[in-house]
Length: 224
Image (cartoon, rainbow, N blue to C red; front, side, top):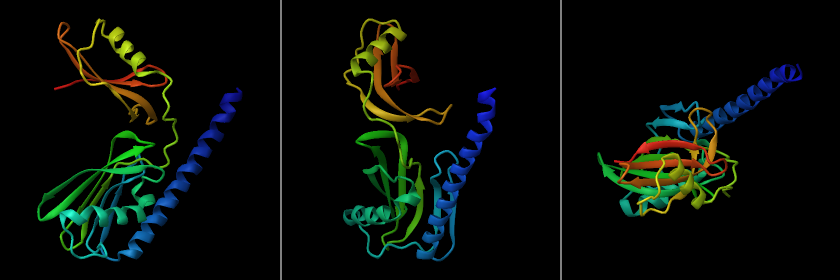
């Protein structure tokens, strides 16, 4: 009975929290549009509250001559200024690649939290040689608040994998690493061991994500 009375209060508190986040994001977007007046379109990601797509016709860098060797410097200054809008506050972006196509440069960044990679959390930004930013895409997470210290060691995670698939050995040469992964059922971020399991006798070639605190196998997929 006590829990049933608490449920409406909990739901109300969650509603207030989400409303405050939406108000903050709208203010950030309004400020962005003041800096770059013109025709701007934004599409929000309902899961991460990040701008899944920003398209504008008047978003220019201060420098109007962009080349591959100076694109990173000027784009990172721009990203840092609007990091709250682009949803990576409290974490870091590391350059993944720069691709030249369609007479533009596409810069791809990977999100990290305390030097741990956040899976599927990238920020992409397209800029022309004239310094016009034509497209921004963010799948980052803001204000991540989880421990980067695992309760389960890598050796324990490997043993869990061997036990789960009933094999005696792992022939993979990769050591495995810590990553942050979003559970698509709960939408919660969790620290996981990302490792590969190869056993030719059992015809196994899998990539595994094992919760680094509970030992639960979050994801098992065939490695091609």
